[in-house]
Length: 288
Image 1: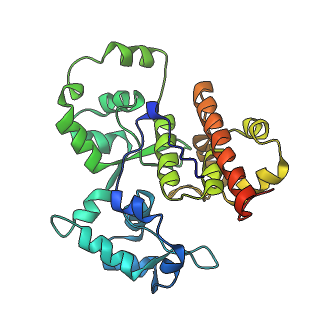
Image 2 (image 1 turned 60 degrees about the vertical axis):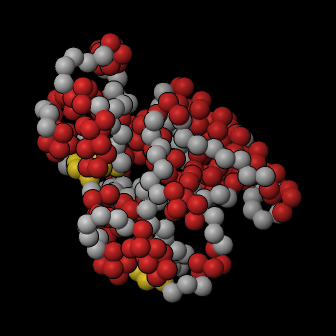
């Protein structure tokens, strides 16, 4: 039995970017492996994207990567590239528009036609969910937002771009709250979970969000922790390599508020029940 776990509903972070791609994650891996594969540079060129835009499309589930090389480099099946091109609607740059991002409050505010201070307040209150991050030279987090989502928000809730903040938002701001890391984590985890149906891999996604002490308590068996570590997804696209910046980014990957930690821990324990059951019935993966 496969136990399906989703990201925290209160984070409003996970949206179905591409239903066809989500369904396709369950296709036979052997069939995909038999398809002709091309590298990231060639795949990006055939889709009219930069390599960074292609990486974002993969993150969002718009494009499915094939089996990686032995060195871990992404590869793409030609059939998948043909599917994405056939599914593209609108102008020639429609796919690029779906993955276009802006970095920081100033650029995001310009898309919405508001001031950066108002945008920052709205983002801190969870009205805009980041799709990624960068760490600048001052080790400050610069959040990235999908341009298409900003424009959709402006069309859907124009009143929030003008006038006074709600009482709930004012309370959060007075308490110096900031939901951006939490909503980003919810989105990131949800996207990763949709890319695999394997119960041990899903458990590894959830384990990666927990602080080390919480993980040890939730998974006391060292052998299971080794399995989860081996299956852990790589850092998200844009994760810095410079140690000082990477240390800042690592803090974004771990759940912080107690209720968030509790949610991920409970979800991990639930996912592990399914993973252990699979191992006992098939012996395919994980400790017995």
